[in-house]
Length: 277
Ligand code: KIV
Ligand code: NA
Image 1 (cartoon, rainbow, N blue to C red):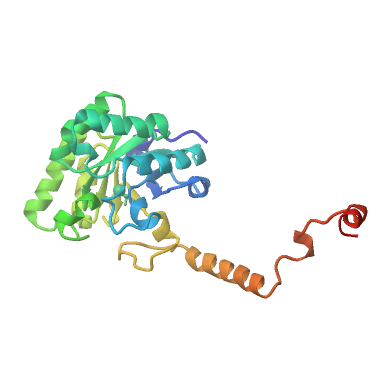
Image 2 (cartoon, helix red, strand yellow):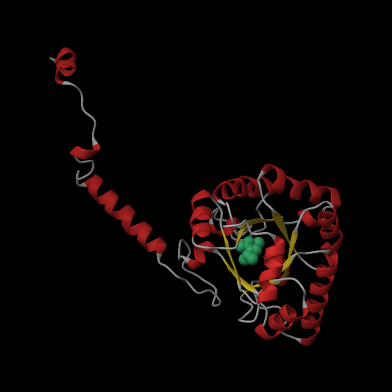
């Protein structure tokens, strides 16, 4: 099948075909998600929480992002690989942001970057777009600002913040984003924004009326942490399956049931004889 492009995503919005996006952080997850029909693979900085064990996305570095994006790119053929610009990068001036986005594209093989924030990151978004880097916006709950937002909570519930969110979304579109992630906003607002914007809106905790949906791989498959946000639907118990598999392996080792004859190598009898009599 043809590689997913930003143009194709626009066409999908036009045709009312929902866009399916999931995060991936390494080669096998990218391959599995791609073969399962995902349109967009997001190397999210959520990798800090789900695979590196940090308690927020703040500690994730550009080197971390490059490292994981390389692995995902190697596993992706058809899906559009989008990589997050990590904490602070979009605020350190155009040059710094361009350099980071450039690394994600050139060194790591991403085909687009995602940048959190509204008004305050417009110059960065414009600079990337002018440089030929496709940018996906991210509004609503922006986890890199968790310490400022005071926790992971729904955004845009009151009239003032809903208006600000819509205004930010429109500015991002003017700055040239090809798509927008809306995280944790009331579905009425997300639906309204999806309808008013010419670019695809991908929701997470943003209800039923977006042009697409995104979830975190480990949440969808229940790998790792047992706390999952209420907006997540999970479609597998893979963590449990992994643990059971490893338990069986450990048991067999302890009971000397593994390895068995078929797992071993042996020597010719004459060589053995010459060595040990
Ligand atoms: O890092 C991430 O996984 C994300 C998605 C939740 C949109 O930004
Ligand atoms: Na992210």
